[in-house]
Amino acid sequence: MRLITTTDMRQLVHRVGLDEFNARLLKVLDEDFSRWEQFQLSPRHATHYPHGVIELMPCADDDLYAFKYVNGHPGNPQQGKLCVVALGMLADVATGYPLMLCEMTWLTALRTAATAALGARYLARKESHLLAIIGTGAQSEFQVSALAGVCDIHTVRYYDPDAKAMVKFANNLKERFPRLMACKSAAEAVEGASLIVTATAAKRHNRILTREMVSPGAHIHALGGDCPGKTELEPALLDHAKIVVEYRPQSQVEGEIQNRPEAEIHAELWEIITGRRPGRESDEELTIFDSVGFALEDYSALRLVNALTEEMGIGQETSLIPELDDPKNLFGALVNYPKKSS
Image (cartoon, rainbow, N blue to C red):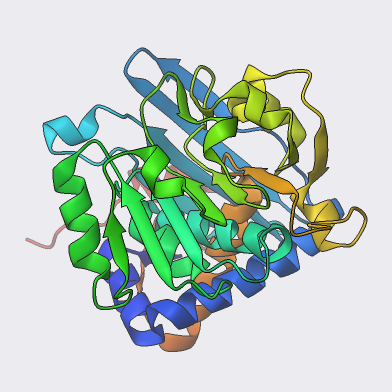
């Protein structure tokens, strides 16, 4: 089994290049969403606590099985810890043997941003030059970088109540995006924006965006609402939008639509990608991708990393499964441990 550490993941992205890695991940996501009906799908298994959530996210087709362990603890940064950390595994369905154990803290950030770009490809206006992002935490730079691969972004406006997070965001992106504009409020950031990302972490029913704040024809990627009791959009905003989700059973529990059960869901993303339902139909309509993160996206990311690391010789082979001369003699292989010579 190949072990991919954080050092390996950093090496992989540096060798491929961030923009090229984003492009390849976008391609793999598009391919896998296009064959949605070939997968065994289920909502993630979530264990909730007052201070956060721990989740398992499985997804499989007839060849590969993938799962991810991931948390969400909004208070962690105040303790010097990441809000989200993750590990993932890819296994061979035919034998049940693991193929790869992989860091997924960086990979989750990359696949989350690539999924935003995939949604924008089908739902944003072609001329989406002004991007506004609300929340400049750990996910923010990944979002902007991935969306720039599908939209011709000229200007990025950003806002976060944490001034240090805004400085961090600007320092990380100033060379890639010369027109960065710090704002004093969410309303200032989104004024006239054709592409809006909400990426906040607080576990409560927020009203980051209201109907009055959003311009006609905007596309909103709402990624911060990802568990029960946690939303970002004014419910009335949903009444005026074309809403797209990843997987209805999960989104209805965790997404923006938990705040508006009667809201009409236009489509799951795969239906738009395969042409079963239309994406954006005019420059005037308001679109919302109510994205909560789904296990198929982790499957795609792990599949890509498995192929690239094998091709490039990155990672190390490790033994976490006993290798036996007699597969029925599991006990004997354990107790008959070779003795040291005297």
